[in-house]
Image 1 (cartoon, one colour):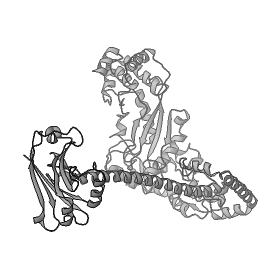
Image 2 (cartoon, chains in turn green, brown):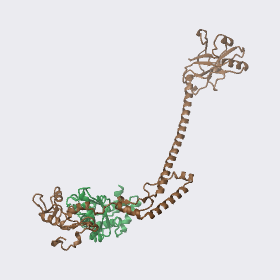
Image 3 (cartoon, chains in turn blue, green):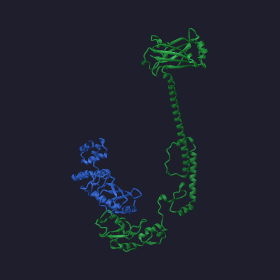
Image 4 (cartoon, one colour):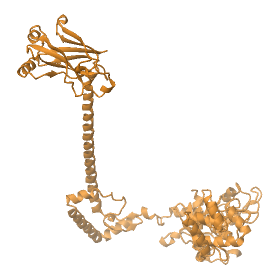
Length: 199
Length: 404
């Protein structure tokens, strides 16, 4: 790894550790290896969003050309969000692509991601299914996102209705996550989800 | 310390002092790209400072200021910032090793280099590269930065180290005595091998190296024994195959003689004597076939019941597995020759045709058809002996059978 990248990550790491956001438990950063090429980030779901109360883990890979190129970031925790792939966790965020600037840091990236959770951009989607639901049925989107936060990120809101529907599909032999994806994609219409799963 | 301009005045002075071993610069002296002291600082038209190298590297792939995204032209929007360069060079800082006696005061850019050569520095060794006590093997876990500390530790801890040694020794003795039971030890050999890198004291190391040697030898012996056993089995199987092959081969001359069979009657005189003593005694030749899947016959010798001076030669049909594929009664020409070993003109040859009405040529119901066909008085035994037919106590009889 280029010296400047490792040196900068070292500096940034210290910066994040000391930051007030860490003190408030809003963001977290951990080293994965000694060479500062891979880190584990964590952001708290912002208040007044369906993600409130959840903790979202991020995989951060630092390229050798950092900070001249952005770090590669994806969600490890499964999340229901128009700009984040519900399958791979890939993130559609301009500053992680062409809008990256060398003066940005891991701290600003984590804060930007947190902001993205508060303000989705359905017109520039990463997950088309989620984005469609967001635009057509915001209420349904929010309860689905809340349910995913509950299941995968430790969020507080338990949705009994959704869980019952998933259990029905699981009893039919469908894998649980697969059942959740199908139901989420079809606005929790059990019949249509079943049809899609068994077609 | 240095003068502050207004924007940084609210920052406490400690901010520019080191916390760890690296110096963290004030924000106005820090490059936003490499996050270290500005080297060869430049100022952009939008009012941001960078290291020259950093901003030019950035502008190779981008056109905006990394801080505020203002469009920047690398030929017209970037100026050397000699004011800041001078400010930084005047930021004399004391060497962090001042507590150990270094009195150097240097600019932040120079201090980085100085830290590497400062003779008061603490060598920053990772845990695994630190010096260990010589007695680490018996349980002394101290770690040191340099040889001097090691020496000091060794001098101060003689008593301690002796204690550790004696403990390790007694444990070694106990281990040895408990492992004297050979059978138990042998059973131990089949335990899975110990994990490499598991912590162990010296005695365990010694023990385990001996044990592993014996263990590997023992395993080798077992493997060799097993191999021997396998080889024995292979050999047994092979010899079985060979004997069955031999059996097969031995039938070849009789099966593939195509009806022309030569029978050397060995021990002729003994046979005659025995037959004259017992009138029911008869000699049979091995069976031979007219073709591989043809009729099977054999030759019978005995003394003529009417006149025991005469040798009788008969032919008998024999049973085979493929009799049902043949025509019965057997029909053909049979010639019998007593071969003279020297003079072929003296050969005694008789030829006869089968007679279908005879019982002898019907399909044999037993291994050998009890009825034969031939000559009760083929030749005088005395003549055979005197005329030289019996050579080395052996009479040669040839039978040629031609099915029709």
